[in-house]
Length: 304
Image (cartoon, rainbow, N blue to C red):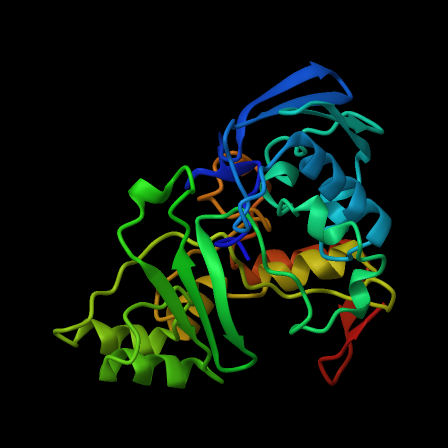
């Protein structure tokens, strides 16, 4: 969807918000954000992109209650068209992430197509409209197999795009993706490859492996509704008793780093480097439990 629907802003590699369909984003007051659109944008069917479409889009998502977008819409009361190119977003409370994150996630819908769809949840994939204003035009989709896009020549970014189109082949697993790379069936994959496959790919003369920092993370989640995980001391001790450096080296073949929060270090806009770290330390883990009143019975089971 990101290729055939425009967003108002996009995020840089450092997660800095940059204008995209928006020419400017300004803070009017603590709960009002003004967005001015680029002039001259059109949808793939030739209709102009206006502030009316943008205001409609955001209010439509509010009414439809899309679970995927709920977190991005949480602070929004409504979107108001001011003129042909200006929209005001009225927030229920100040939001640090609205202009940087929310505006980068919501795809702009053409009002003249979507205003007649009262309940989008009833649409099947084949019935869902695909007319957007993005840099590529949706051409074909075979569910579970294939999708084809062509470059939208009237897009403001078209001159920067060096391909005429993009074809996506859908595989069942990463083994199929890697085979596609080996045989030349596909030119590139942006999916995270298995650590073992990366080493093999680096040995192939016709393949180039590009390593980039990832916003993603692997984590272990504790169920706080049940004992003993409801006890903070137990959770801290388990974290101290987990050799995460070894996990990175063994499970990820060293292609990662130990994190201290769900915000990856590469996300410099939001990452806080001074969050308390828990290094692998069995003695500290035991001391944490003992201080909280735990001990071990004759069979080595933890008791309190």
